[in-house]
Length: 164
Image (cartoon, rainbow, N blue to C red; front, side, top):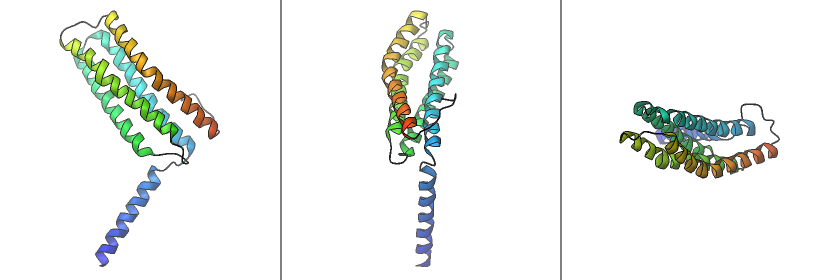
């Protein structure tokens, strides 16, 4: 009986610590976490696009794999993040943003890598065509994220510095 109580107490303690760690410590920290994750994805996309003209399959594939792993980690993180002060719209916007890039990586960017594997050069016309498709898909997610970020900082009276 004592072991059961000890086990239940341990389980309860772990759950309390997990809830405390996953809850919103402050709206500023929450906002910073969401936007930092999304900004990091954007930087990865830019790095990937910059490498396409090189046709260096090894570098391109490595960057693709790293970025897709980061996207998956971001999605997992944002799913676990939960709302801040019962507000989940920024979390949902971040998830939509990350999921949009996941779709882009698994479609347009995967096709670009396949072209390079088939010894097709990634010339400016092909890169432009890829970027046009990506822009159409990503514009909605970016706009949604910015709208919800703006709403969040206004609602919680957050002053934004140059990091965002």
